[in-house]
Image 1 (tube, helix red, strand yellow):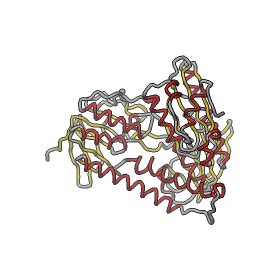
Image 2 (tube, helix red, strand yellow):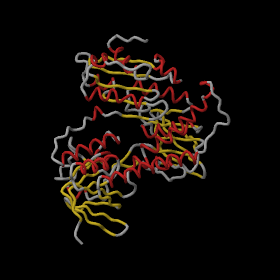
Image 3 (cartoon, rainbow, N blue to C red):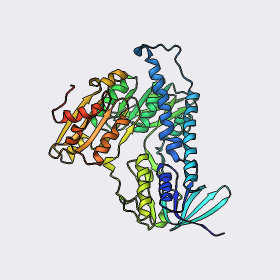
Length: 464
């Protein structure tokens, strides 16, 4: 049987993969996309989207509990965890179906099965009907990543969960341990804590949300603790003893190991790239700590083979993967796209309060040799934040004192994951403080705090 021939084959249909397929098709390429599980990949089915649906339910529940603050009454407030999860799964299903529609609209051939690359330009797919052979001059790897599991802390789906188990929890935890306080860990900690779980977060680094600006991490920690979370920093879970209905965690802090009992543990200690069983080593692809090494254009060094998204390394963000997909598709079609700038990609964490950032932290900017000017503006000084009942938060901006370049922006508080894009655009346009200060921000909005933080960096702040 002759192999089906394409111009481009994309392996993996997460945000990077399906966007790459669509853009390549728009540019006149004959495209196939191979997916082993669900169209939309992890992000749409088991990551970004369903977690946000869960967190929205927790946010509404939190607001219902605060009804009296707004002059409202809400009696017998409660929740049905199964219904919350069902809504989350329905949202994921809707978006996964949307990806299928986009594939049909753009005439992209979808092949469901497990892919490998036996030779350059060839893809072999194990499907339910047998093995299907495909060929293409260009192959784009977009296989994503999965949860990292540490020895002794492996998930079992009952007492110890990964993010996938936490998205469809077999029960509502009463006493929960979350290992790791990155975005995934702290979002699940926030969700279950809001719904009433007695939640402890263990972080091996010296602060929660360790990739964020130190001041923002400290602010967020105060709010988490105020909400009832227990935060253990510079701590490590050495082992888990599992028994019927309980887990005893051996947690080391300050050189001493203490035991704590929980009924549920969520392990969120990072991710590993899905590089196995693809045949990459035989092709000569360089793999470093489960991630494919690429250049700035996502080229692997093997002619016609590209890697995008989580498999290609940090930052592990869906929006980064999507833009890489567009860039590679345009490169294949003969275009001259600009490489992605990692320093201008925003990171967003949807805990309560939300956290968002772009560019350098204050510490990183100083380490890089910049003479910095730092501006801050608190939510309590903003009329819209007070009207919303969200007066706790902070906007922080970091500028180069000599050039006025916006080096970084960091936020914690309500809706900051939406606000951060203003600073992202500013960095992309290589704006300085002058343009930001001369920009008219609408009133009353939370975005006014972005203006005031810039003004504060240059001693011109008005409202504090």
